[in-house]
Length: 330
Image 1 (cartoon, helix red, strand yellow):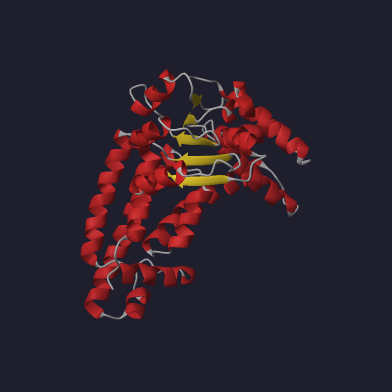
Image 2 (cartoon, helix red, strand yellow):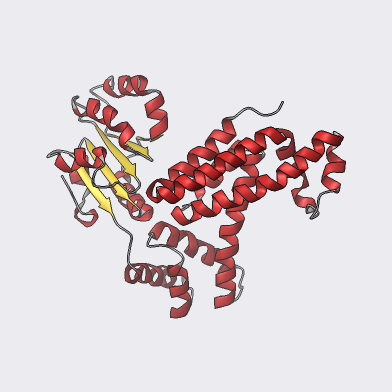
């Protein structure tokens, strides 16, 4: 059964066993999820991959819940058609005290998961489309007014233009503006543009550096804290390629001289002192042959992203997680 987001209430969701929330507007999805679960502390979060890899255990735990358990919400993120078999198993069972919210990116009309929910008379299917600029401008104006931050309409439009119709990204930008203004710094077009652009570039560079250094905790934190969109994925892939080519030169040099300090000091262009330690980790983790294979693989990922933009975030995220879990040279 198809519902519009603004028609949803906590009562409607609570009566449903399964709810599919799909589309590009992550911010609006999160608002709805927060509103329907705010009075409930019994919430479990899963990634689709976790469930598929341990589907039997997941279903066993779900079906063996006590009859006296309180109302529970399960949120499944990054769902695709792969999870449909699990959903069909759940559909057959009675889980009155549990509501499962399945969150997906864009699902095409031919998607089996989408068709399953659209045809269902009991379960909910809620599409989330990008917000238009008028909606985002109003959200921005209300936010800034509430925070007592003065800003021209031109600068509000500048912030909105960065958000690709997603209110979550808008709130991320507005939070940056709020934190910046707390220090009494001037909020003009130049500073606002610089603040937003530099933050995006830094996050992508930081993400890749920590991935290649296999700093798992930091990498996952960056992935979870940033709402990367399809366009970002192409930038991430290209930045990966550039960094890998630089590391390949250094890794080959280190293989020849077996002296990490000499390798770092002889790098051209010179490596900034703050980056030396993380570059050392990258060289230790990736030998020349492994880097060559990784360059080939990221080139394939970039091709797949351009061919399948609606799944780009999943493609780049899976690639990054795969590198974190791969074996090092040691």
